[in-house]
Image (cartoon, rainbow, N blue to C red; front, side):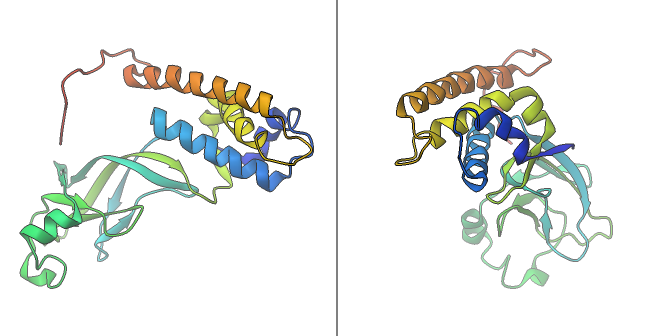
Length: 212
């Protein structure tokens, strides 16, 4: 996926917040992009990985973290999500002695952020894992997806400005404009969230839960 550097957003921010230090602007650009993507879930990512010998797969590409795991397949078979508490309660030995419990994976879980672990540990030599994710920016991201700037850059700038202009005792502090930009950002989030639900293909929105 194509990316852009954070400084590309500055042309939309500095005219309203002259003198704002770049690190401050970047911090609030990341925060606005995170709020936007958590609400709209527009950053989709899917990939396939060879499990190899390490049971934990690092799934999130650079400058991103996982917001949601939509689906995980092992060798073409869909796995069910399972929490660590659920696994510990029903299969207490699954972490302490994995050699006692191996076979065809049935679940996926997370033992650390931005990874996926399939359970039980597979015994087959073929270990292809495919994941479907929704992502958001990492706390120290230096880049964002290019589509986010191209299609939603103004909205992200509104969110960043709503926070930047509210900062106290700065040369650019303007609480009235901060409220104005925050309101535009919140309104845009509502519209974008509805668009995401239907998708660009305009498929009907599901009204009945689909759990997996």
